[in-house]
Amino acid sequence: MRLDAQALRRMKSVTPIPMLTAYTTPVARALEQAGVPVLLVGDTVGMVEMGFDSTRHVTLDHMCYHVGAVRRGAPDTHIVGDLPYDTDRDPQTALDSARRLLAAGADSVKLEGPKDDVIRHLVAAGIDVVGHTGLTPQTANSFRQVGRDDGDARRIRDEALRIAAAGAFMLVLEHIPDGLAGAITGAVPVPTIGIGAGPDCDGQVLVINDAIGLGDRWPPFSRQYAYVGRTLIEAAQTYVREVTQRRF
Image (cartoon, rainbow, N blue to C red; front, side, top):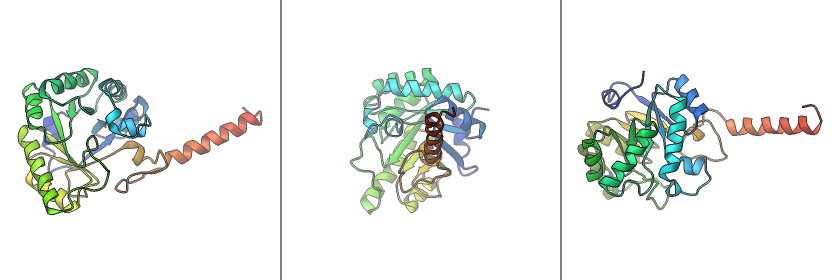
């Protein structure tokens, strides 16, 4: 059964929420069969699947394409669609962008940063919003952990409170100290989803390519549950050997 935003919100402090990213139909189908309750079609697709050096190159057309692919693979799973860079620059632009993601198959949308006016506008229009603070890749100058000094920690905590007060039903906390994530989780009334933010969040999200070891390097806070990249190389080597030896 597909969970809606209110059902996910009620899971705070009750049931930890597992979330993974997905970008393609076969991966989404496998994750739904595995029982993953929330799939994030993240703009990370630009870096892990499209070869860009930044998520800022991802367009709304790209996101709609991947949201549609994931929906076809996971018809019964809650799908969060990322609003790509600059498509939420003002309330009306964000609303137009969000409606396109919903039309493509998303149940809710995610945006980065404390955009109070944008979040309120989307929520008033009946759109469920996931917030995101801590490291925000669309505008970050590096991927180093943030929130390590008192001033930056206060900023992130204040952003989290503002995002929740504006109406977001869930909040991603990225690459911040565990203690800060735990304090924010206790302070906001909505579930927090950590990525590199320690075990005290209400849920966790990983990029699927990192989780399955597809690629050759991964963020230090990620965890690999398989090494699909190695399997792919070995399978392709076997194929090449069989063809060149005329055994295929």
